[in-house]
Amino acid sequence: MTMTTARQKVLAYLKKNRLASAQEIARALHVTPANARHHLRILAADGRVTVVSAGGEGRGRPVKHYGLSAALAGDQLPALLGAVLDEWLGGLSPSKREQALRSLAERMGGTLQSESAPLMRRLASAVERLNQLHYQARWEAGAEGPRILLGPCPYAKVIAAHLELCTMDTALLEILLERPILQVQRNETTMQGLCPFLFQIG
Image (cartoon, rainbow, N blue to C red):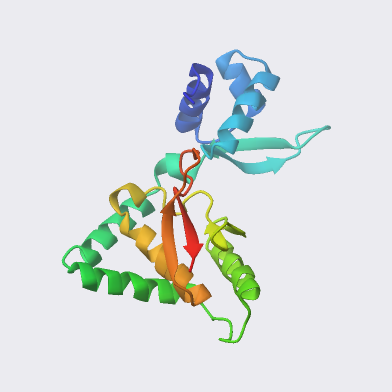
C-alpha cells in the first residue's frame, strides 16, 4: 500500500522535530487531532513510528509523544549484519558455508529435548524456541505430516542479499526436532515480509 501524502508529512515532521504529540502534529499540518492520531496509529502499526513517552498534561488521557522508529531513524544494524555475513561466508566453499550455517543454527537452538521426547512435545518446544527468536512460528498438521510455518522473517532487512539464512532456518529446525526437514515454497499468496516457505517434517 502506498503511503498517503498526509502520512509522509507526519513522517517529515517527526524527522525534523524528533518528538511530537498528535496535538502538535495536528497544529503543524492543519489537520484535526483525531486525523493526526489516525495516521499515527497506522504508522505505528507499520513500524514506522513508535510511542517514545506518555505522560499527563492536565486532565484527561495521557499525552503520547511519538518519534521515528529505529529503522527510519537510522538503524545501522542491518548494514553491519550484511557486512559480517559477507566477510564470514564470502570466501567459503558451498560445503563449508553449509557447515558454518549449521554451526550457527546449533548455537541458536539452545537446549534440546531428550531423545525419547515424543514428536508433539518436540514440536511445541521447537515453536517455543523459535518464538523466543522472534520467528512468530506455529505448527500445523498436513497431508504429509506436521509442518512448521514462520511469520514475518526476523531477518527481513538483510534476507534479500543473504538467502543462505533460509538454509540456516532449515538446519535450526532439524536440530530442534531431530528430524529431516524439507523446505517447501508456500502455494498461497503471502504478505510482504512473510516467510515464503513452509518446513515439512520428515
